[in-house]
Image 1 (tube, rainbow, N blue to C red):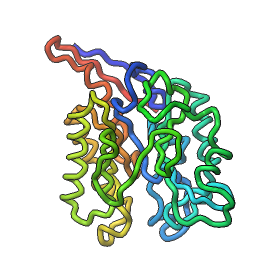
Image 2 (image 1 turned 90 degrees about the horizontal axis):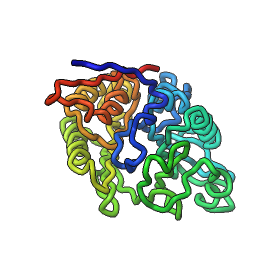
Image 3 (image 1 turned 120 degrees about the vertical axis):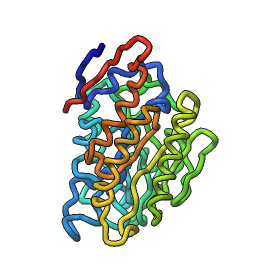
Length: 297
């Protein structure tokens, strides 16, 4: 027996129990989220772009983890990918997020904010600029913990990579798999030249997420790699090659996979696979009942 339903990707969290803490929800995310509208440089941003669409479009496609990399310049935050300015400011990204949350109050956004490149012409700290210019009522003001979904609907939850007293606190290691305070497991081996080792790192993080799926842990799993570490292949080439494998693997496992942060999330509908793992309990072979949802734009 099969029951079929549809729901829109832009509001898929509406169907998730509000009593679940956010670390127990599989969340699709984008790496260097602000690059989607960048079109300059070699091959129209070929060495810079990691996404094809704007942050607003990503959110409407079901993405719930945004990776914001900010250069502190003139007491403001400019969006960067390494040394490259992406022709957007952090305020532009936040406006896209606020618009989305206004239209979809059942949703929340987990936003990683990272200090990028060098500071220039600043008279205050990164944290002070964040608090003065950007930290408004759209942010969740709770303590350093994983809130329940019902607490943060309509809000942005800060995943802080710059320190300070706000949001979920982290201390990051470069190009590594590591644990933070025995509650956050991170796989971010972006500078991995061995394709097999990178795949194993991703798969091991998924196994960790499945094993710890109903505990106090959160898993952050970056499937992305840095440009130039695969010979002549670009970031897009890697995504076109690997995203279909990743999507198939996620669906075949059918388990909690944590936060999956990818390049070109729309290739092979990788983000759809992540979302669908949240509805794995709707499969009940003992009753011969399968509830299938079709994700629609």
